[in-house]
Structures are given as C-alpha cells and as structure tokens.
Length: 232
Image (cartoon, rainbow, N blue to C red; front, side):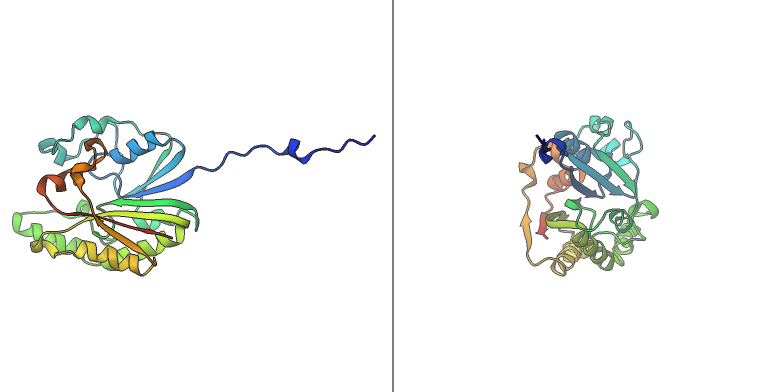
C-alpha cells in the first residue's frame, strides 16, 4: 500500500501581514499622542510615523503646551510608545522612500502635508518679533506646492491598489496666505487620483482625546478644518 502525503498537512498557516499605516508629521507638539492612541487601539495594524522631530521621551512637553492647552491635558505627554509604532526622523520624501511600492494601506497627515517646503519648517526659523511672524509663514510656504506634489506622487506609488490617503488641512487667515494650504493639497491630489473628496470637518464632534493639539486649537479659534481624501 502506498501512502499519499496530503499537501494540506505540510502547509503551515501563515499569519496575514499587518496592515501598514503611515502618519506624516505625527510628532507635532504633543509627542505623537494620536499615533500612540491609534496604535494602542489597533494592535493588529503596524503604524509608522515620519517627522523631523523625535518622540524625545515620555515626559516631553512642547513649550506651547506649558501656557495654553485648549482643554488638552499634559498627561498626554506621558504616554509610552506602543510596540506597533515605529518612528522615522526624516522629511516626508525620504521617509516614504523606505517603503516598497504598492505596500501601504493608509497614509494620513494632520495639518503637516501641504504647508511646508522640504527645506523650511518652524524648527529652523526664529521669529524675532511680531512683524516677522507673517514673513515666516511666507518663507515656510516658499516651495511648498512643489514639495507637496512630490510627496503626493510618492504616496500614490506606495499605496496598495485600493489604499487610501487622508489629509486634514485648514483655511488660513487672509493676512497669511488665503487658502494656499488647501490649494497645494487639492492640486497635488488632482494630479494623482481620479476622485478627490473634500469635506468640512465638525471638530466639535470629535472626542477630545482623539483630537490633535492643532485640531483642538482650530476648534477653539473657530477656523475651518477640511478633510481631503482619495483612494488608489
């Protein structure tokens, strides 16, 4: 008698790979709180943060949080980094270049993508007086449209078919540069995705513990927040 080996007996069940979510500009001024919360809530996903700033330590408190917190408590700063969150200290282009094409499930950004150029951000600019404050915005924005397009081009390549990109942006004051931020995002998205959805966000409906510091700040100032999304 000849015993035939069933192929099923020799096939090990492979665990399905974790979905990959990339958060651009996630450190912000509250030590990547939103990335940490989402990574804790969804341990079956792998989160990657890309920012020019480090998650310095569990006790890191940004200077803007020392004086105003808009209802956000400083205990957010003491949240440890979950095991399923990896942080890369790089600009968006270099950070996204780490990933293979067609490998990402979701790319998100909260008020970071679309605003800065590659070479300029608020970390390397000093504001000496109130008048220079408005000049700083112009310097930071210089080259932002070209850089935003380059980043969104990369996002389009790195997303899996069916993968999504979600960007939160806001409407700027006229004295700074009316709608330049939103225009950069819309232009870059339109060049890469067939359908782009833009919707106004009711920030008051988002639970406070899931808001970024900026989102809570804009809610307090009654600035308009937009959600721009697209699918590959």
